[in-house]
View 1: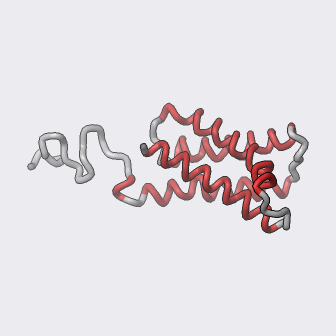
View 2 (view 1 turned 60 degrees about the vertical axis):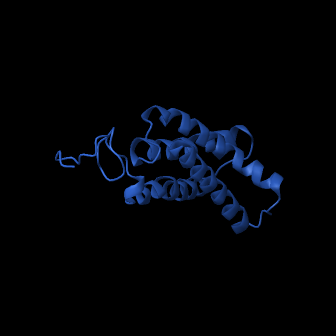
View 3 (view 1 turned 180 degrees about the horizontal axis):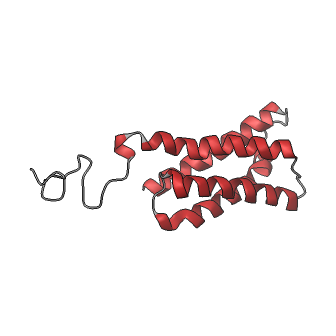
Length: 139
């Protein structure tokens, strides 16, 4: 469930990047326009999510956050070039900064929230094992 939530957050943030960018460049807000701009980055995001899946730590900054960010930016721009949408150096820099800040940044914030931190195997949210003992063996 945590992985699905992380993927959803990532996708929403990529879409926010696209919508904000299109609004700033007066490119319109049609669904077709947003989809046309978003698909390369969403495809890159999907590759990044799949490539980092084996760590099974969707909220971790490294390797998941950094891997997802780099795949989203690099693959997204490669697909834009292949599709004839083009990229400029300024756009690559802005997209790398925005997506890095948001795709990695939300994970940094999430790691500060105790309920979202990874727990040692077999421990509940209070740090107790299945018998009710804490890390020092006390009940």
